[in-house]
Length: 187
Image (cartoon, rainbow, N blue to C red; front, side, top):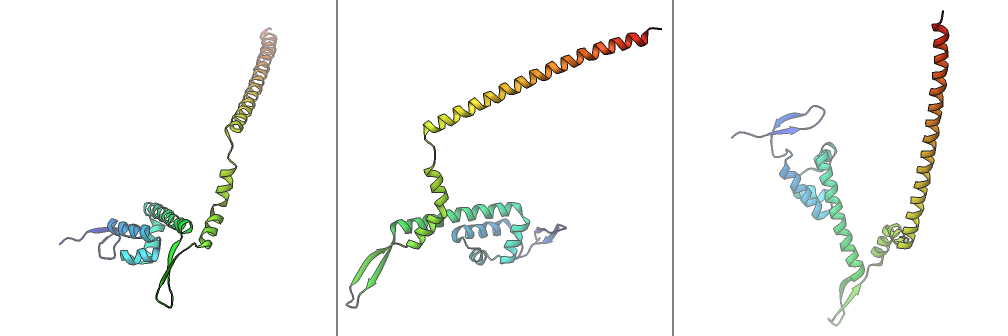
């Protein structure tokens, strides 16, 4: 049975015989899938059988794996945020059992989660409130267009002035050069 070869990174890349510890696309996929599900590196390592040092080394050395890691963490973070938002808005059901054996059901709303989410998104909310209405956007656009037109006229005037200076300089240079040529050309 022929063994597969594995490319090993480092300062001098090498090919080595594969073994159960070798990195593979399947191992990477299993790790990334577990990371997406748990948003926890140590749990993803445990589920995929990848030592944590190997996962972090692979992330440091392999740009593609690093990009996949970032994408998976981003997706997992969004899922976690949605779950926390749902819990903050809808609460969680809490069942308490009384001494007489009867149950009481109530909804708990974790204020600390809501407060943390408010703190995290405060800047975005303020920015959204301060968005401009259509009239303000039209006014700003008009001012920008007017300013750009003034700048264009100024540039055209400067270019016309430069052309006149060049023409004057070339006429003056021709006249002086012609006189010199005549003076030096005669015996």
